[in-house]
Length: 303
Image (cartoon, rainbow, N blue to C red; front, side):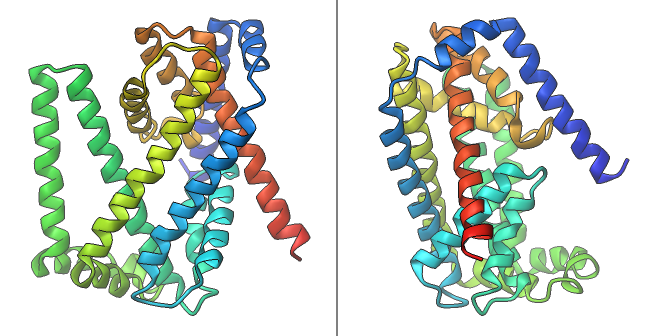
């Protein structure tokens, strides 16, 4: 099955899951709850996006500094457009589109792709760690502990492969025919960052934690606006699990899976299903609207 067919199937799966959820919860009830949101959501989301894009730009400033000198606000602009593409296009186009924009700043596509892959790998590793911690706190069983321990061992082995000369030579053996011929500089940039700038990668990880912390804070505040009686720690733990679940490639960008997972988890804390659906739909709608506006400004007004 080709990639286009898979993307279509994943899109349809996401739409079907979301439609089933809305039918189960009640479309009228969800619409009524969704439209009752307080107007203070606007400044909250505005502050959130400023913090989110600021931290993202700071992340890429750290990643690009060893290779090229790029202005902070140019990086923020490049990331914002790349994020917008990722929000509106299926697949992982947005994740790697940042490489194209970085190539306009005296960097090769390969170098930009390497930085994008590193940033995504760090993000996924942190999400896996937060998800594992949440599982351990919420469901402290021996099976969960064994699964987390096994995942940790696998993670350490992969880390060892990436930082050791022998491991890098093994990885390089899989890359040349597929990558190096198409995007020169990918391997060199990837392993240069791992070998010579490990502290930078640690700082990128810390910045990523703060970036997702901003997202969790925005979701918590929206829950509060809907009158949900729930603590910040509960939102933190549940959101970590939701992000972990959406890593499974069932639908495009986690559509439907994210909202359904949220309903199942937050209902355990006594949050009404319509409120949970409304929070996540509102967050998604604002994301899509902002992404559309940013792309319109970039591709239409700036041209």
